[in-house]
Length: 127
Ligand code: HEM
Image (cartoon, rainbow, N blue to C red):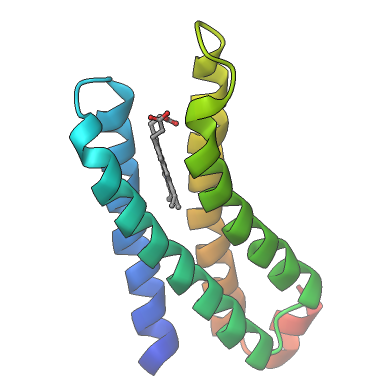
């Protein structure tokens, strides 16, 4: 993998790692000032993931996998923004956990697409 897809893979990795670190700090409840930074980095992450789906389609990666990643990439920020209003009180930790898992899943989807692309068009299409 070279050029723009490789650069996009690294943007996903770096912004994803930043999301994880910021999110875990936010989770401690003592860094609400970092939420805006987390949202901005999250938007860069999502745009890079969507860009990766475009490269994946062109490289012949299975449409089902690409479609799942597109839906995932769109659900993550919507969930991230609305989650603060969901289930106030003790049960909110479950809402937080779902967001964390959605985020980790999104990082994984980016890696999966990149790996399928690196295997070449025929193997990528086979999934
Ligand atoms: C790799 C992707 C991501 C990871 C690993 C991640 C992780 C986390 C974690 C661990 C928290 C703290 C616990 C929680 O409130 O759930 C958090 C909070 C938050 N995240 Fe994310 N996140 C990601 C992407 C996003 C995106 C794309 C958005 C929106 C653009 C977003 C918006 C938010 C918001 C608004 C909060 C604060 C919610 C609150 O205070 O209740 N996150 N994130």
